[in-house]
Every structure is written in structure tokens, then in C-alpha cells.
Length: 251
Image (cartoon, rainbow, N blue to C red):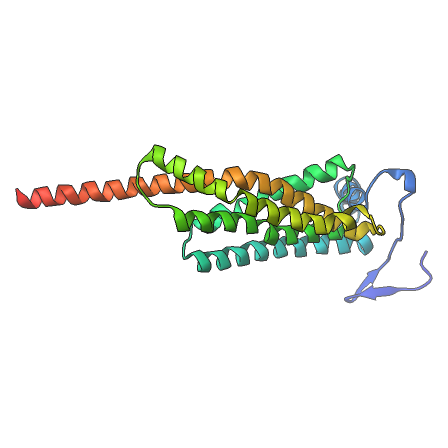
């Protein structure tokens, strides 16, 4: 029986504190999910007027997750707006931003290979930073393709020309990636002192950037070629329609 009465927003409140044993093998969120799905419904059925909710680490973690979802949406939106303004196009930003999911796949694979099953706060911060860094190589590739590509509407020629232009950016893309990763590897692996929080952040950025770079060298030119092929089809259709209109007028 509590020795005092505590109220929160005018309602009598009782707090129950608990912790997990080190050998439990469960996270607070997993335990909270079990209580909410298996225990709380029975208690509410027996005491309908009772309100049960978690505080402490569970509450803070869930609020942080909601904030991260909003942060991810804002990051993607801002990147798209900036790219759309710079390239004066609504399609090219999508081509560039498709490198982001591949970078996240690289983060997941890197953590799995390193035996990291629980991601910390700084690891997610690293993923948000990765979203802004991983597009750099794609921007270099698309800018080069835009500058040197001449639209000929010959499918075989388009593919050869795009492949040749992409090959000239191989050194620039690799150097941009390797110099960035080289600056993060010492912190990621603790060569001059290990910090668990910063290590996960640097690990996510470096490995995600490496994985996305090799995908960028192949995937981005392919998408650019598809975009140009569709552009050729539209131009051909417009030309044919104009030709038909001229013929109809002459008749």
C-alpha cells in the first residue's frame, strides 16, 4: 500500500519501478510490448477505469523514434528541394536520391558483419548524415552526364555514350569516397581511442558510403539512360504528331 497519494493531471497515480537482469536477453521495448499485448488487456478488463502506460526509458525511446521519423522525412524533403532547384528538374533528384536506400543497406550489412544487433542513438544520427553525404557521388555523375551528353535518340549510341561518360568519372567518384572514408575509419575502429557511441556513427557513414558508391557507378548511369530513352520516345511521338498535322493541313 502506498504511504502517500500522488496525482498527475488530477488523477491518482501509482508508479512501479523495475529493471532488467543482465542475463534477460531482452530490451525494454520488447518487455513493454509483451506487457501491452498480454498483461495490460487483462488488467483493463478487470479494472476498466485504470490507465496503464510506461515511462522512463521506454517512453523516451518511443518519443525519440517518433522524432527520428519526422527528421528522416525532413531530410529527404530538403535534399529533394535543393536538388530540384539546382538541376531545374523533378525527375533527376529522384535518380540521385535512389543512392540513399543502397547506403542504408550497406549500414545494415556492416553492422551485421560486425555483430552489432542493437543500434544506438548515434548510429541513427550517422544514417541521417549519410543521406546527405551519399548523394555527392551521384551528383558528380549526373552533372557530368548532363554536360557531355548529346541527345541522339539512337538507343545503342546512347548506351555507349553514357558508358563512356560514366567511365571518366570513375576516379573522381572513388577519390571522393575513399578520402571521406579514410577520415572516418580511425574513429570507427578506435585506432586512437575507442568511443562506443561515435564508433557506431562513423561506422554507419563510412560503410554506407562505400556500399552506395559502387552501386552509384553502375546504377545511376543505367537510370540516366532509361530517362534519356523515355525522352527520345517522347520526342519521336511529338515529331510524328507534328508530321501528321502538317500532312492533314496539306491535304
